[in-house]
Image (cartoon, rainbow, N blue to C red; front, side, top):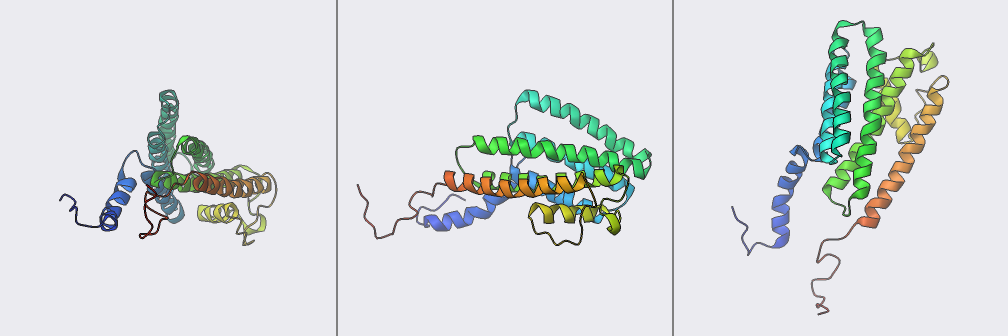
Length: 244
């Protein structure tokens, strides 16, 4: 139905708001879809502990990285290289179904960590080049921030699988949800203290995550504030006469 010219502008904006949000979350070229895939990855990683779930999570991650490339309008050469890496990753995910769980856990964690290390860089590069701040900018910044937390969680899991002792020392190795919990409390510098890396390089990696988390928030907020431009007509009183 066409917009009625008699309907106030604010009413039309309110009507089209949910539609625009739905388009932002479902479009294949949108950071909203990237954000949804990250949340799906988190939910699967935190709730399913079966051996086949590792492969399922990895396939979702492959889809996440591919959508990230599309939304970020990555260079064709970068898409080709990343596409080849994703094909190898998919093969590894399939092979994971036929190898022991102990071996698969460390290998898949390394692959997942590498995928999530590359994706935030691609997103941030795209956001820096954008001249305006809109819904896609905000969704992209949130997606990149969550990817950093997920990437460090898989890095901690890889260290726990390959180092001599348990990653959390006396707390034991623990399931992957513990690594997710520790990663995001470290990223946000919440620091409950119930889970602590027993030794290096886990301790150094945790410090790096704290610094990245804080610097990301500072730079992201600064970017949004510096580039934010209010919509036409905002900030002026309805009774204020036009200067022209």
